[in-house]
Length: 111
Image: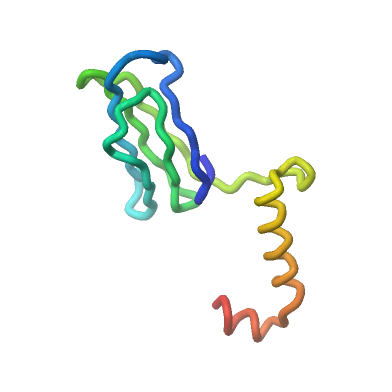
């Protein structure tokens, strides 16, 4: 999974199973995830907040565990021509900022 990106998680063996409940937690002290804990579906949208962190992802159907996985949250390198317009624009703005300020100003602004 990628940080700060809406990820779609799905129980692939369970298209029309009924009430699937999700539990997603970091396996370490740091890390957070946001998702609608009231979603009862075989598909859920989640945003993982901390890169280089592992998360436990479990899904239950009628109280029975049907999915028990661990996911690593990492940044993924992509070919610039293959990313969507919004992500490419955000990258270009960040790159312009990186090259347009000097070291001292950058440290004062960003730490």
